[in-house]
Length: 269
Image 1: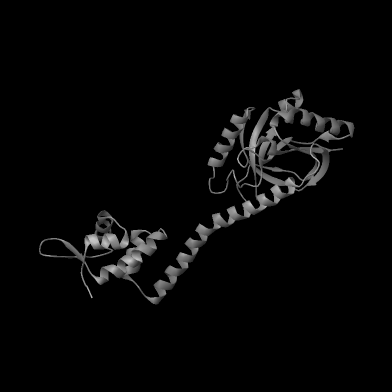
Image 2: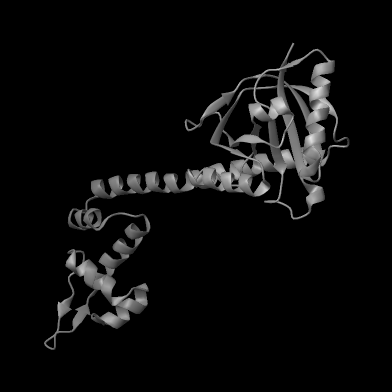
């Protein structure tokens, strides 16, 4: 069996560059021998060390942690290392698990709204309290809303994901409500899970006058007016922020006729 390997052979075997091997050597992780001509040669001792280094680097262990482990390998340190590996793997898995849950919940919502027979009808619903994460600033054009969502998403790219987030929308400004301009938005927001600690506001539990419509956002103004008329005619009054929630939008379909939007206005007698 061959007992010595050139730097080129090791680089090919481990898919590493020469600089990486020299770096490991400088940090004391490996100790290749030198031939009379000055060329490095690697032995089986270096190979098992490189096996360990490669695996631990995948888990983002520092060179200091790897060196410490290589120098103090016992069953106890190996058990401790494996516990740390499990913790690191769990941290890697958690965002994917949460994303999977979000996508599954989004599918439930989309399937629910895809089976609606009657759109553009006002329905009073009792809805539990919800947490939202929002960005401030008046906006009106679709492009401004999309930019606001991107800025908001950028605050936490790990948790917020436009394609799979459960719900996102805008809050109508007080000025917009007073003037009957329901395209004047005050905040763009994402709903977040109950367990999340990062949020700006809680939308209180209560009754909401709701209306779901399909198609272009150009319908929004008249349909908001329809909901406001319903509220006034039925002896209700507005009790908080009016919302426009984008259940299915340009991020999920290029067909405008497939857009699904829900208007929600909190009400009280």
